Image 1 (cartoon, rainbow over the protein chains, first blue to last red):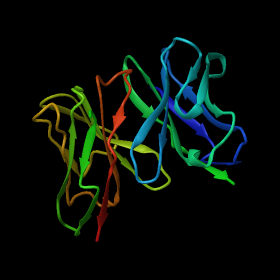
Image 2: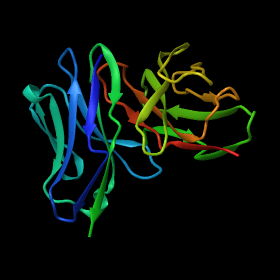
Image 3: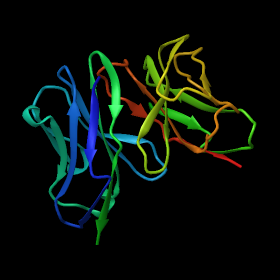
Image 4: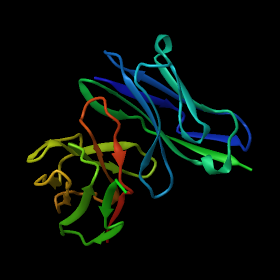
Length: 112
Length: 113
């Protein structure tokens, strides 16, 4: 069965600094990989999705993620953090044979 | 606008009472889901449904029940058998269960008083 591990339950960066949120996956077949963002008291919103096309996926709000098969990773990055990026981020994995599995989430704090 | 509507946003329940959370979608999706989210924790799957009149238990189905009489509706009942029901509940839908993007509602807070 597939699974996702998010390294670091909390990440804190300064405004303008690089954001790096780590995600490693386990899947026996080529996976579909997702990043979602959740603002307080709201549902999850899709940031980006990898489906075996380009390995570098661009999403909304300036975020992007790179699929690295050799490292089984799908880390989320943004060159310059903004205060509005403060939220919880979830990595998820799915494949044609299985339902979606979510990581435990990483809470991003942006300091002024 | 297309989307997923959950109601109510906030609900208070006395111990021993059953409560039902509503979820309606107008995305014409076949699959619908209910997740539970506790503070500081990830999402745990309660139930999911791939088609009308069919649903499957997720990882934490005990103390919950669902129905899927219509494609657009997937209500969740939190029964008195659920020992720790205070949580944030998220309804979601997708075109199909496997490999598809899941879209979420805004969530419902349930508090036991």
